[in-house]
Structure formats: C-alpha cells, structure tokens
Image 1: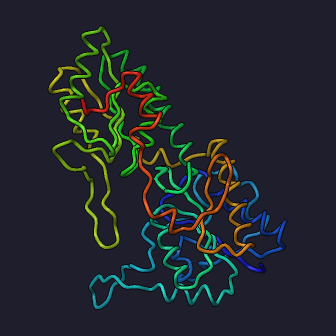
Image 2 (image 1 turned 45 degrees about the vertical axis):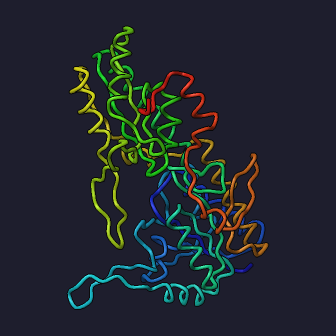
Image 3 (image 1 turned 120 degrees about the vertical axis):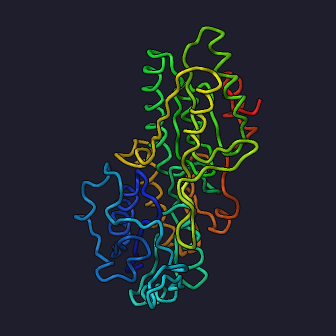
Length: 361
C-alpha cells in the first residue's frame, strides 16, 4: 500500500478519533503508507478542501476526544443527494462522481467508519470497484456480525449514570421518573442501562408494550411500599396497539426522527396511577464526550485491524469482534440482518428474573 484514506459517516459516536488515530499510526509505522482524511463523510470527495493529509502530528492527542476530527454527515449519501435545480429540490445520484474522485486520488484502500447507513453505502461503492474496508460504529449496537460496536459502552455509561441520578430525586419526591434513551429499532441501550441502573420497567422496540401493564407495575410497587419507580424507555418502543412515535417525518434524504414515546408513557402513568411523573429525554448527551476505556481499546483495535485487512486486500470486508478477537467478515454478511435484542438470551432472562417489567404482562 502507498496511499489510503479514512472517513467517518453517520452520527458521531465516542471512539471515532481513536479509530482514526489507530489507522494513521498503523499505516505509517507498519506500512510506510500515506494517509488522507476525507472531511464530512462522502461529501468530502466532492467538496473543495474535502481531502486533507493525516500524519502523526494531526492525530496527536485525539485518543480521548469525543466527536471526530474529520467531521461527519449523516445525510451524505452519494446515491441520494439533494440539490436545487431550477428552484426545485431534486434527489440525484452522484456516486459515479465519488468513484471518479476516489480513482483520481489513486487510493489503495478506503477505510469507512460508520453505522448501518454509512456501511451500506460503502458496500454499494465496493460493488462499483472501490477498495473498501468497513469499521462498525454506532451507539445503538445494532450492526450484525459483531458482538459490539464502539460507542455503545460510552452511551451505556452515560445512560446508567442518568438513571442513578434520577433514582435519588425519584425517591426523595416519591415520583415516577421516565428516561427516554436512544437506540432506534434496537433496545440494547435501554435494556443494558436499565438493568445496570435498577429500572423497574424497561420498554424496548423488540417487545410491544401495554400502557396498562406499565401502570400496573407502578401501582404494585406502591402497594408494596415503594413510593417511586424508574422507567427506561427506548425511543423506538411502541405500544401493542399503536405505532412508534416520531418527532419528525422522513423523506428521500432524511430518515424519520424517533422521539416522544417517553412523554406518552409519563402522561399515561401519571393519569392512571395518581403518582407524580416526570420525563427526561437524554438525547445527544449519549453521543458526546470522552469515550470509555473499553471504547478506546476496541476502537483502536478496529482501526489497526482495518489497516491490516486493507494490506491483505480484503476489500468489501468489515472488522468485527467475536469471542474477544477482532476478525474481518464480508460486509454483505454483516449487513444482511440488523442485530436486535435476543428475547431468549441471558440478558432478558436476567432482567425478568429480577422482576423488571417489559410492559407485556
């Protein structure tokens, strides 16, 4: 290898900079390879100044930093780019221009760090001849083929700390505290943080819930002398007889934005139980800040493994964690089936054994 490039796409996640650092240091120290950084995801290939050199100086000190020094664009899909033509918004395919720009750079590999959407784009570019290596990134932990994605552990830490803090005020004021968490269509954050944070009710997308079952759990706790309750709600949770709640609808570019189910749960519980209830939406706090030790460690291993995979010509593959080892698997395999909470797994059995309600009783 003589020259590779790296980009970060989709939403930000703690650990992105750790991957970039590992890519740069491994490429330079092991392979004597030049590294380019692509600014703002795939958009950088089409923008003036969108490609910058990355050396040891540029990545110095970025290991503990959140965000990404390269920027990210969660709507930067070259296969569906929104432009203005004759005063009208239209969606066009500029993927051929991106491929042309990549070829003009004479890249031996393009390392793409992203979640489900970004990696799907990378697979399509691979099918057009781009030498792609994928690195799985998302706080939602919903990418198949890998046991865990970096960013997830940090999001869990933040969510669990929020639950710990809500516990004290809930107990002091005898309230029901509802915490709405991210996760899209996967309930990993709500489930893991809910168990770690002592939640009494956990609502996840994989299990449609009944509002009355949630209220029943709160009433039963009061009957037994527990004057407060903690409810962890995934943003993608939905009632048995209803739909997911969105704060914004989607279109050809924007995916629908989930949000608001926590408020609905809060209002129902307060009305039906007579308990004072409050909702907290943790939102993007879960995405920011310094990554945990685990996420720094995993992200660094992923970055180094991605460079090694590129050197071995394993294009169209993604690095992944299995049985404690970082391996590489075909992108097609990784993206074939989105990962969801195993309803018969030990995490769910543990939660139910602790008496946690999932609103399906």
